[in-house]
Image: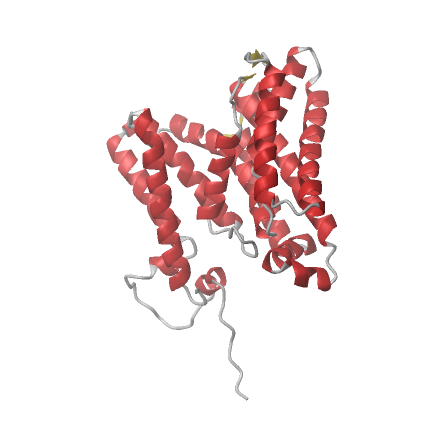
Length: 339
């Protein structure tokens, strides 16, 4: 019986040398991992740079980096969770509660280290409660965490009592200072993304997440402690949501009603999905998530610079996302091993 090399995944196939010279073909870009996202991102960036000179200024680019860093941290946790077949629609709302509680504590005179510890512990507990509900009941993750998001949005409003709460100059270093010209917020986001990427690719925990997303029943039969893994994944999503909330607080210098919340979460979900992570589980990529987050940030920045009427901004953003998702799907199907 002849042996055949198994089909590689799109990411592997594109990186592996073929040993044969090949010319540029019309479909070559689509065979590059995440080529569709890269194409749309380049087109949006070039168009905006031509239309608005301020787009390429260092001040604007640093502002974009700061803005996308918060969503990147949420999206990083969501990538790993969705790869395992889970979903948490409450991460943005968790961030809103963490931000509100932290602002009130800082405003009351608590020390910054104590507030950080308490806030992250609270966010982790919220994620763990979501994990308990999803793991030990038959409620679908989508339903459970969406309900949790609505509940947490209400809690955030109650904590603030409808008022904006300022924190003075506390935590402003994290939100505004730079390391070697790169915002601290971006450094934190890169470290989190790198940690999730390494976890997914090189650790047993990451491999178990892929196995659970592929087939939870088979994963259970293979000896994986599925309930424990689920609780750990939701707790991790919680602590990253809390970190995102603290990052946002440090950038804004205040907590206000309707800061973060469900809309922030939907943005993160969109970035993860168009980045190639499957809603059904079993497949996820941090690189795709990064590209999705950057694309959303660049589109939002472009709309502001081009002074697009706010009534059209959601329309334009949704259209760009749809185009990126369609091109990304064509790229996935056209790659070797795609189906």
